[in-house]
Length: 169
Picture (cartoon, rainbow, N blue to C red):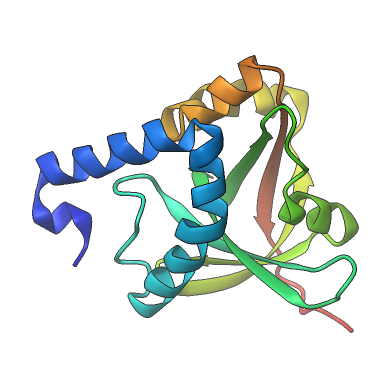
């Protein structure tokens, strides 16, 4: 059952809890090792109608493992910008770089699943002028981005553009 069906108070409570917990070191670990695997299963099973993150917009991003060559799927918060998707990762100080960021660096061809629809896309780093426009909106989606970035973290913002050409290889 989607959180919004349970009503705005419950949805707001879930969203606030995710936001508070997600801005702590323990929360980052929980999100990575517990919430993300559960989110993948629930999101795919419900065709994107149910999310563990409350009202925060989530897509499933599939990258190709840079060492394994295997598909790797992670839930990621996103913005819509016309027909493009904007995704972000902020690496908290002292943490390793998120594997999906490294995978995009090795192979920018990705799959994006939003509300049961999967499409091919090519990821590219956001240009400086795009970053200036996207950053405030990304922080509204997930305030922990600003928390970690302000504390000295590194941010990676990518624009995912539909790839009309079939993949080769």
